[in-house]
Image (cartoon, rainbow, N blue to C red; front, side, top):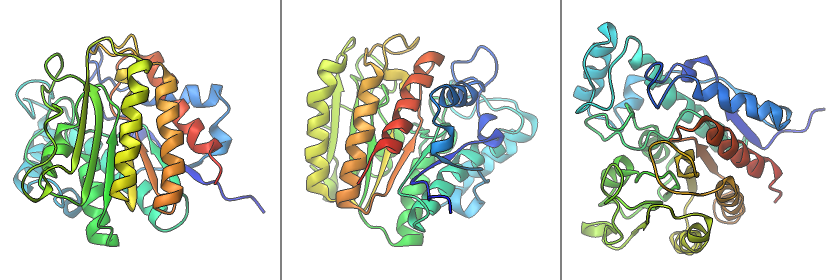
Length: 319
């Protein structure tokens, strides 16, 4: 009898179609670049592969405003115009592709919550700039936001931790839950004074009843692994105090050296370390429940290196 694999991978053509065409930083080749590296690293047989599904309108609207969901569906028919101020163009089929990204994260979440796996990774996901009411920064629907809402409504999870090591601040998640003390938010990113979206200052720690409950750690341009390690120690201490029941890791590869639109200089060791440490933390705090989502990254070699190291850390982790 085949031993159950503890790590799932959700991938397939449905999410590979999420992208904005040839020449755009977020092209449709990112998915296959990662899968080829997974094969080179001989990790294919160490994970259970599941196919994405489309998110339902009800699932999308658990986070997004219905009027915005309707707008994306309308512009998806003709593929004209923009879904934000100019970064995120509509194209024919964008609604189906973006819905599949959300559905992929939900497939992974369902498998974890039903005990079919402890950890999962979704490469084309982690679209952290989309707000409840509009697209932003190449992100149409915010899959992490939907997952957080679904964990609470469907499975009764009250304390969710969202950890983000993408070079860009995860503003779409942060501001959606800025006043919610039960959503732990820890984000290491390039200082917003030098990079889109211009947010995530250290003093942004939540508001209202959630004041002081969020952690933003901006790093200066050119910061590398030597700056990441102490920042990561702060993240671990923060999570220990928050005691989450489920952890989402957004592991954008645009924080590696050589990305064409950012300025951080991590190596893939940062991503490997974050994934391994969170796997250990998740086993101790929340029955192993850990979901990794790919996020950004526009240097194809960096995508392959960073994401495959995350999967390797998930696979190699032993309780």
